Image (cartoon, rainbow, N blue to C red; front, side, top):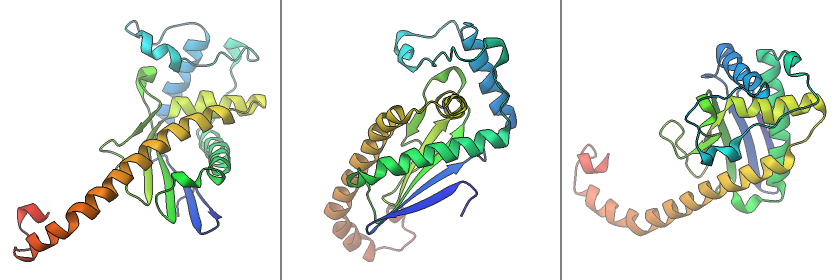
Length: 206
């Protein structure tokens, strides 16, 4: 069990939320936070941002003096991101257990730096392979700062936003796993007949 992992049982389904910060260090947080400060001061991230990214724009927190945004330590960032997000996500899962694809269901987030906010979440990438027991996502550290950490300092809840994101992302996972189950049930017997006749090290069986 990691330092940023929590499990909750809903009937016979055990849901886990896991955050992985191994590839998101203090230097990444500093860069992402500087990007947010630049945005708050109405400096653009880059000159080639297109229309599709407008919907991903950061919220402008008028309650903060732009020049005096609060300092956020690396440990505070990790603890607050996990505490708030996991609480919201488990509350969401309570009423959406139909999206789970296993009795032991883990939702894992690999936090990373994504320059220029090209995306906030990614599902199905090579770096985060999923299976029925594990729904794995890449997550933007910048998104955690401006959607979880800064609002929490102001007493603002972004539950509805997290709810919409996770409904969208977990639906991707559910659909993919159901296709996987169909493929397995349809072709597994055929493959078994095939590789019984071949060495276990035959290329088609690997």
